[in-house]
Amino acid sequence: MNSRGWINLLLVLLLLGLLAIAIYEPGKPNKAEVPRITGLMPQNVHKLRIEDTGRTPVLLRKDNGRWMMTSPLRVPADEGRIESLLRVLQAKSIAQYPMSQVDANQLQLDSPVLVLRVDDMTLRFGTTDALGGSRYVQVGNTVHLITDRYSHLVRGPATNLISPLLLPMQEAAAIVALELPGLHLQQEEGRWTADGKMVPGDARQTLLDEWRHARALRVTIAATSPGASQATQHVRIWLKHKDTLQSVDFSLLAGDSEVILRRDDLDIQYHLPTDAARRLLALPAAHPGRQTAK
Image 1 (cartoon, rainbow, N blue to C red):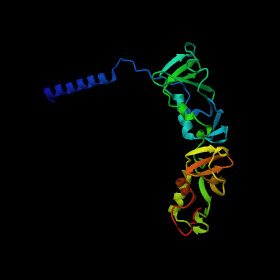
Image 2: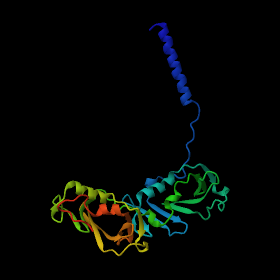
Image 3: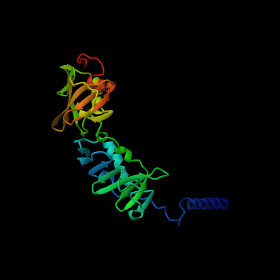
Image 4: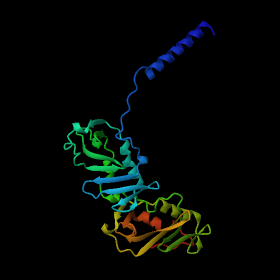
């Protein structure tokens, strides 16, 4: 390499060195990470008690990896909503104040709008700050200011925390039979039949998928939902999980603008639009084994 080539190489190396200094700024201390309000990870939580103003406390417990509401009802909980709520444990603390240096009454921490008891830890939600709408949360002897993304998740009736899924979430659980008004679909020796006649695979699969993913628009306590006529029809879905056979039974109620599937064993009912309910109660296409669901 001639002298000009060596000079060019040295210039390139010098430029790379200057670029590295500009990017990494050696000698300058790293920016401190924003602290989290707790050291508890959401996935490690097993018990949750929610105390909201004007409502009976809601108790939840994780059982075999699934969240269950144990009071005031014993029903599967809305996994997504609970997981979103528990993210508050890792919320970034915008500011921190010793409890001894704040006015608990002014921040409404002496009468909090929301209390979360997470395992053995308590989070008290006070008022919001005057400027940014961030919320004061007391954890132990420290008051944190956090972005308010969590308290709205538990507002309203306890039924908002119930899973909207019509069928229980069980890994590897399979639907093996459906008893619908005017249609009895079941699996026999690996083949699906409707009232003794073969069912096309695409129609059967569509109906099964509708049930696997069926979600209610809302869930209410059975005794408090107006506008539904007395149930005259029933639906039974048979599930098989390993060697266990389980039935999920519904009473079918027709409302003015919706269909309600009521779980009498749980004292709750699922509200569905009429179109969504229609897809659950009949095969999607006509075939010799189909009877029209009424």
